[in-house]
Image: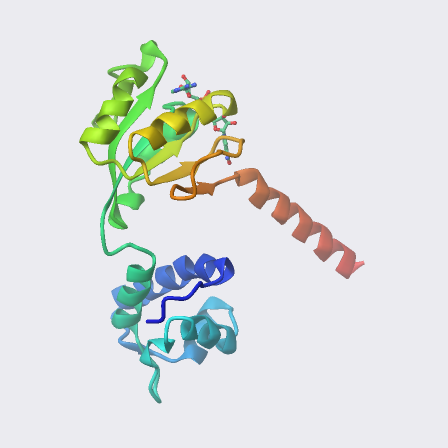
Length: 213
Ligand code: NAI
């Protein structure tokens, strides 16, 4: 595969392909044409071919793509052919909800620990994992080879916590705090704002109403 820059828009669509192909694989489907995939996913067949051409096309021949091969290749591109060790920082509503959501582990994101600064939470168990004090966080990240930290703490302390994570070798931050994190280029940050998605929904409702009337 050529090692050139792939647009973030294409990368953003890969998890969806991966999800659909995983379902097809589980249903025992062996091959699928770009047209069939297009029908299921509501994306044009030409978009699918263009997206896949970024990665050499995945060898589509006459009668379609091999589902399992495509699923595995896209998984490799997404870095899902390896495991990632993950911790959650902030064991409040959101942190606990994420900790309780088992599905990430199926994708190789291994939940290794959860930390909070509130002593009232220390020792309490979530999915058999004790909530630990922040004082133990830095050594834990170093010693357990933690790759990813999920930040579910208020924005006021997120920058300081991110600095500690970076100093101890973290590689990626899944940031739910409403603040931009000034981290070095080598650290990957994915900001998640559920309200952005909700605003997009409001926009689409608005658009639809304007079209109808
Ligand atoms: P919460 O108040 O239930 O939990 C926050 C937890 O973080 C508390 O247990 C608190 O003790 C802990 N904490 C605070 N400062 C800390 C620090 N320096 N180190 C370690 N732990 C610390 O709040 P909730 O509902 O879980 O939300 C967490 C954060 O995520 C909030 O700042 C909220 O604004 C944000 N949020 C973001 C969303 C998004 O879509 N990006 C959606 C919902 C919440």
